[in-house]
Image (cartoon, rainbow, N blue to C red; front, top):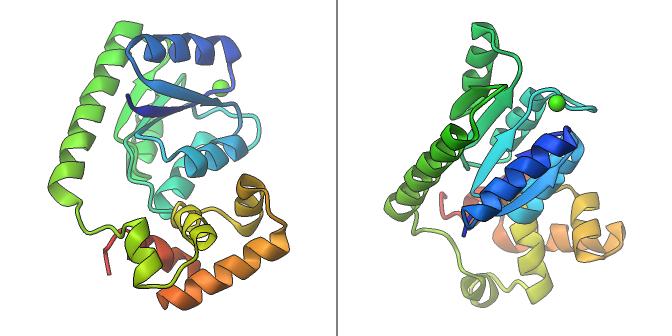
Length: 201
Ligand code: CA
């Protein structure tokens, strides 16, 4: 079962996709705005993102750019009515893995999603391995249980406000934990936390 984030403001389309993905045995989550998409991406750590470009607040390119800058490596499949070559090129330049134009065939879309998930799972097993476990963060770095949670959310690119909301803390407490995490991990910036947790440094 894979976690799939559907970023789509057309509720009918989003629910149709959701049902199809559930039928395939996946766990889809729907976000209808760019803001929600970034929050859900941080919360859910999706295995794949289906991304519409025309969203009510910011466009999908912004979401894609932001996800990649936060170190999210999950495959991103753009699903858009914009079919110009320049749109597609822009998407691929920003880090998309696939681009499907609307209207689309559901069977083909499911097949493409399946293919991306298989490839991503394969890369995970061949490349991964260096990431730090909760146990190591406790025993070697001295993080408390709460700070481990904060560190994981920081690694996904969450802001203090988002961490506070997710864990039900005040922003003051959340900021304190963040400072402790940075200090204990010896991370100079928040962005560095992700690299440390993934074992890249
Ligand atoms: Ca749209």
